[in-house]
Every structure is written in structure tokens, then in C-alpha cells.
Image (cartoon, rainbow, N blue to C red; front, side):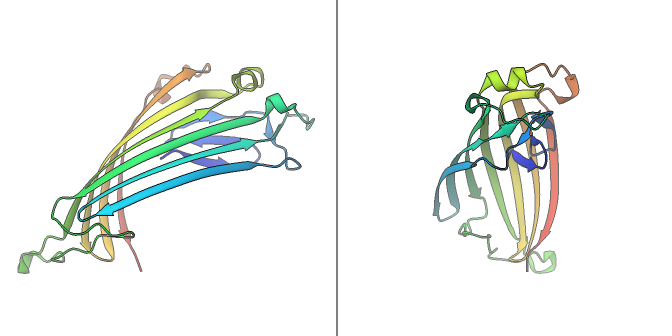
Length: 193
């Protein structure tokens, strides 16, 4: 998904770690209220799952000199994602993990559970007047496609591989070819207690 990193400036990055938006010299106005609104829906049935999430955040910003910007200079962020998974080996998709029918043990014929996953995420940073007039770099909109394979060796260990492809639109002057529509491969081994 698309990650938010907060500090003195607002920065957004892709799942692969490519930063595509930075508010530059403008920082948060701690005296203003930050509004968040979100909705989440999820379904599980047998080996399948489907989920949808939407959120909106309105940020109050200040400029580099610390002067409060106008209401028109606030930043509105809208995002959503949809995710679908299918456990190829037929186990039930739980809310937290998949419990393999046969734990990974090649000597006893157990290979764990295998799952395919797809996720689409979209993020739109509204208020182009603010974006263009305050030295913000990057892109105002991004779509990210993730294709993944999860291998559950037992209820406590999972190995996963995700391929991510991000598509940037509404170029805001970032002409660095290395950050334009990046691909990433994320390999992760997890142990849950």
C-alpha cells in the first residue's frame, strides 16, 4: 500500500519505498484540527477473501516561515484499496492467518498452505493550487498494483513475495526517470507469536 510518513513535512511513499510526494517547506499546523474519515468492509468465505478500504484526511498546513496558510492551502488526501486473496490449497482464510491442513514437513508430505493475493490501491492528493504554489515535489495521484504469493508453513510462520507496480499521474515537475512508474519486489519472512 501507500504509506504516510509524518514529521515536519508530509511525505508519501509506495510499498517499495519510492517517495512520490513531499510537501517541501510547508509543515503541519499543530493548532488546526486534522480531520480523518474512513470506511472498511471485509468478507471471508472458505479459501477466499475480499476487502475494501477508503479514507480521507484533511491537513492544516503552514508555510516555511511559520505563517498560517489559508483554508484553500489545506491539503486533502483521498485513498482507497481493494484486495482479493485465494488459498490455493483449500484451507479456510482466517481473519489473522491461514492454518495449513498439513504443516511444512517434506518428510511427512506436508507443504503448508499457498495463497495468491492481488491488491489495487489509489491515492489522490487534492488541492493543486497549494501543490503548485508551495514547492511541493512529486505526483498528485498514484495507482499501485500488487501481486503476491503467501506460503504459510505453519500457523506461526509465513514467507511472502509481493511484486508492486506503481503508476504515477498528474506529474508535478518530478522528472527523475528512476522514480517514474517504479516496480519493486518485496520478499518477507514473518514469525508470529
